[in-house]
Image 1 (cartoon, helix red, strand yellow):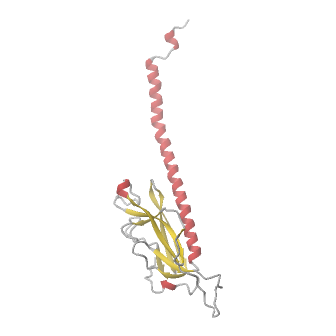
Image 2 (tube, rainbow, N blue to C red; image 1 turned 90 degrees about the vertical axis):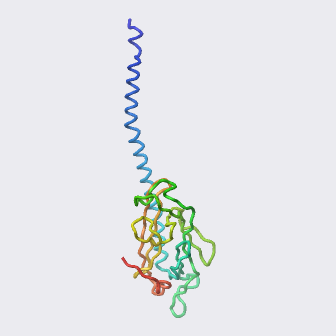
Image 3 (cartoon, one colour; image 1 turned 180 degrees about the horizontal axis):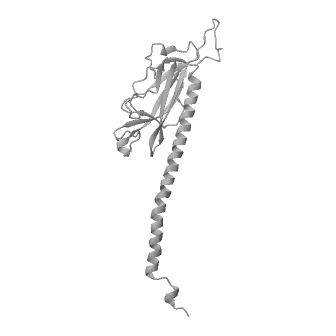
Length: 224
């Protein structure tokens, strides 16, 4: 007959098993957490890319047939005003000139201010935590009416100036710029509120209507 001692684990053996499990957990858990965070970041990047690309495509489709009236922005937020051909009244008048619809305005609406120092993160990856941003949504108003949100509230503007340096590369980041071909649109999106990183989308829009230059005729033109 076996003794009770032979059937039971000794304290030393129990401690050895616990130690092995602890070692395995110490090795596996960080790997698991790292993989989970990587997947979370990638999901945030994918969502940001889809949202900002969709909005850029919508703006390109709309603005290429527009008459740009003004790139002069409000003191607080950049914006752009434009008109579209008036389909209800017929696109052309008796003289073959385009009939333009009511004035439309694209502008940014600030939702909150984000300070890198408060969140202890370097959002734009420029090596410091001194930047401040407006987290905004892009809105459109027609004929002076209430603004309609065209996007979620993930777009960033420099809080020190609407034309500030969003990504810290020393270049001014204007959302709307007149170019020789028409109009440049550049938007910066926050990946996620708790993830450091920005995504950028850019469109070079050529105005296809010869009467559509409008407010770009006397605008300061930039080129690459």
